[in-house]
Image 1 (cartoon, rainbow over the protein chains, first blue to last red):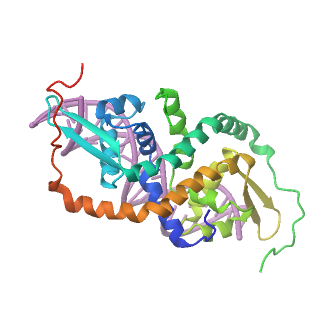
Image 2: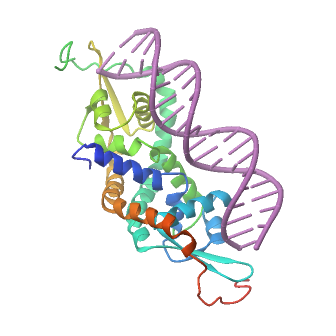
Amino acid sequence: MFETADPETCQRVLKVLTLVGDKWTLLVIGHLEHGPVRFGALQRAVTGISHRMLTVTLRALERDGLVDRTAYPSVPPRVEYQLTDLGRTLLPPVRALGEWAWTHLDEIAENQGRFTAAGATAGLSTDTPRSVHPER
Amino acid sequence: MFETADPETCQRVLKVLTLVGDKWTLLVIGHLEHGPVRFGALQRAVTGISHRMLTVTLRALERDGLVDRTAYPSVPPRVEYQLTDLGRTLLPPVRALGEWAWTHLDEIAENQGRFTAAGATAGLSTDTPRSVHPER
DNA sequence: CCGTATCCATTATGATACTG
DNA sequence: CAGTATCATAATGGATACGG
């Protein structure tokens, strides 16, 4: 990736991260995988999300055309959210990250513990320095 | 993904998002794809990143065991960063997101424009409400 | 060249309360 | 049940300056 390390690529990836790289968006998209879901059901499914943040997240996804909102004029109100065609194209990348999370999180937790423990142990490399002024 | 919409899955995905879902981490990882890169080269490659944020990002990746840091005791100093084996496992998901970004960003930009333009047009659904009290 | 610390502005998030 | 508004706070990120 990023074979051409050009500014434009960075810009685009940055924009995507601001879209889906926040605390809740990917989780919400993941839970919309199998069809329409009601607001309340979503909130129960996405552990820990607040009422407000679910609303905010869904509004952003709606604005970006990743999610469709359908309100039924019943009493009490019923509102369902589902992925658009565009939203579904995000599922493979989301799944990839999700599976990575599931597979490697324990390993990372170990590393974090080790890091604080190590600390002073990690000194400079003993590799032969190429020169005093390596480049230019 | 998230077939089992259990709290544990949410926890894990949340943790991963706090690890790699920030503004710069995925871009930095992407630019480390092909081997060791010097600090300065990284900063030039990742358009717009500040000196401070590159340092912060790299420290976090180092702590999590995704990146190795090698300092050569030359003057001026030379420091190289490279992905660990664990870090390389993150490349496929990162690539997937990067490619999605490249493919769909224009479409999203259009949708955003349309949303503000539409606004009042989008009313309630005209679907037949199932009942006044849809569930329970 | 690389790293760190400080200061500061902006943003993201959560709690709460109120409306239809 | 779903949405919105307000407020307080934490987290994020950039500029800058200094040290090794």
